[in-house]
Amino acid sequence: MTQPYGAQSMVEPLRRVLVKRPDEAFGTADPAVWNYTARPNLEEARREHDALVEILREAGVEVIDHPEPQPERADAIFVFDPVLVTDHGAVLLRMGKELRHGEEEALGRRLQEVGVPVLAALAGEATAEGGDLLWLDRQTLAVGQGFRTNVEGLRQLREILAGLDVQVLPVELPYFTGPVACLHLLSLISLVDHDLAVVYPPLLSVPFWKTLRDRGVRLIEVPEEEFPSMGPNVLALAPGRCLMLEGNPVTRRRLEEAGCEVLTYRGREISLKAEGGPTCLTRPIWRR
Image 1 (cartoon, rainbow, N blue to C red):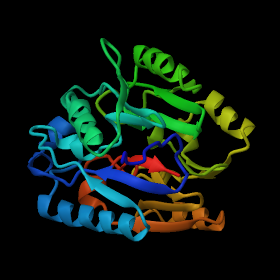
Image 2: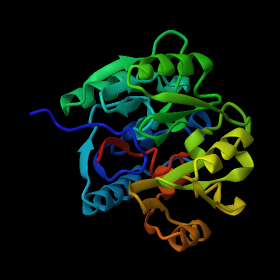
Image 3: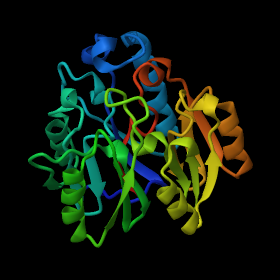
């Protein structure tokens, strides 16, 4: 029997998710090469990741491991980025960060092993990373346009998704600190309910901010001091129930005041050192 899949939502109840436990490539990462703040401690990173997985399981999520070795690919633990999972299968993306090239094929093989077919793959000069892809609803995908996702990536995604009756909405991203740093669309916004989002307004484009307001999305603003600690990077486990990195008390309080249940995890090694929050560390396979 084919396992269920489909994740054209950021907030529907999370049922199946794929993760990759930190491996030697992550533990030996050169911070200067990977733009990490420091070299991760592998033993502690694994403890943090195991605890994160336990939180997901306790929330009723089936957690699937991606065990294929990824030598020299420290960022492979961030399984959200290499693919997009639709209701009709996975789209293999093409990473904008050259050091990550090849993660797509490995992740595609694992998805097929657990019953998720590959629908399509980006090709040629196209680049797109999952961190730039935000489902506003089942039929609307916002696509960040920055250093990681280019115009050709947008064009190919639009072509692939047209057959699924999905509208693709381009969203310009700011220069911020330049091409080396990782600034995705999901660095700036996370949906935590159908009409509620956590955002960092200073870096949002005005047209996209207006789009959110026009769609009736309520905005919870992340204070400046909690942007570096990934306050806007929040994983919805279900509408109004979410998981975020500990150490963002103002954002957490604002979420709770908006009616959300908030869970937190420790991510000093797996998140703060390596620029990847809970959305980056998880690849939803099935939301229902």
